[in-house]
Image (cartoon, rainbow, N blue to C red; front, side, top):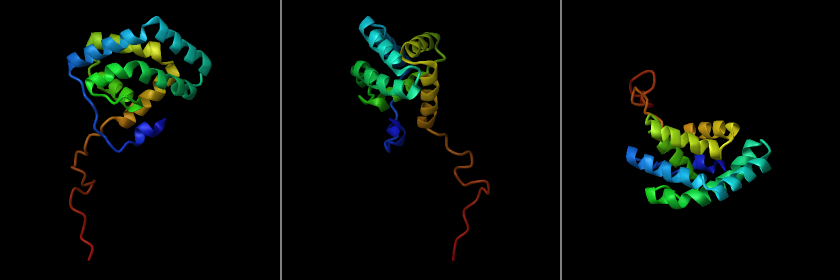
Length: 147
């Protein structure tokens, strides 16, 4: 499952504010359907509080139900697409409507333990800002030539 973190293609799909609102609305509607909620609840019960087991059962469900919508917005139809979606929406969570919808979707999909685990994974996936010194290190200059 952690292969998401090892991908060599670091291009991340981004969303405009309006796309984020539309996508999270559509995805929240999907996970709110009674048949999908039943599958989610069954997976949570079967995992019995084990976040890794829950992740292994919920991720395929999320891919199955959310990928048709997410691919329309440029996300891959796999676990990396789901993770990229959550990251792309998080950027716009200063918008109260997006935050409320994202929180509602997370509550339906995730246990508190799994939510914490995924947040750690998403932080690992997030693009890193370049060093303030341009990558030259603390010395600030060029490395000495070796003769």
